[in-house]
Image (cartoon, rainbow, N blue to C red; front, side, top):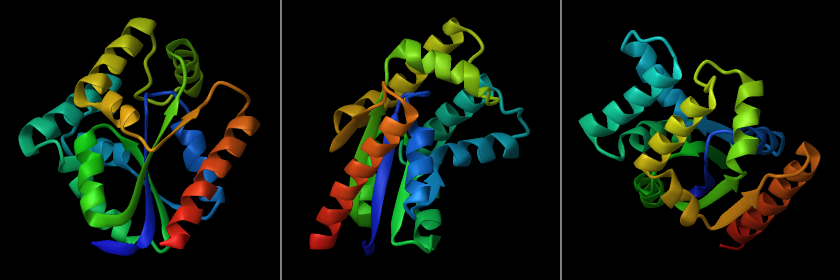
Length: 189
C-alpha cells in the first residue's frame, strides 16, 4: 500500500463541476489522473468515434468484460507514476473503484461535487465536448447510465461533498478550503 501520496478521488454527476475541481487542484500543485481518459482511450482502441453513446457503451462493456474494478485498476499505475505527493483522481463512477483505491493508497479520500440537473445540463451544452449530450433526453439517459454504474453511491459515500451552485470564483474557493482540510489531516498522520 502506498502511504507517501495523498490521493483524492473525485465523484459527481456529469456537469457538476469536476473540471473546476481539477483546475483548482492543478493550481494547488496536484497531479491529475482522469478515469474518463481511460474510457476514451479504450473507445479509440476499439475503433469507435468518441460520441456519448460509444463512450457510455465502452464504459459498460469494460465493466461487463473485466469487472467493476477495471477502470480503477488501469489508473493505479498512472497514479503511482505521478511525481507530486498529491494526486487527484477525476471521475469515480462506482464505490468499487473507491474501494480499490483505498486498498492501494493509505491516504485516499473520496470527495464529490453536487449541482442540480438543470444547472448541469446547461453547463454541458455550453462545454460542447464530443461526449456531451445535445438534448435533455440524452442528458437524462447519460445520468441514468451513470447512476446505473453507481455514481450515486460514490456521492453518498463521500467524506466531503462540495456544492457548486454559485460563481466559479466562490466554488474554487470552496474547493481550496476542502482540500486544505484534507491536506492538514494527511500531514498529521
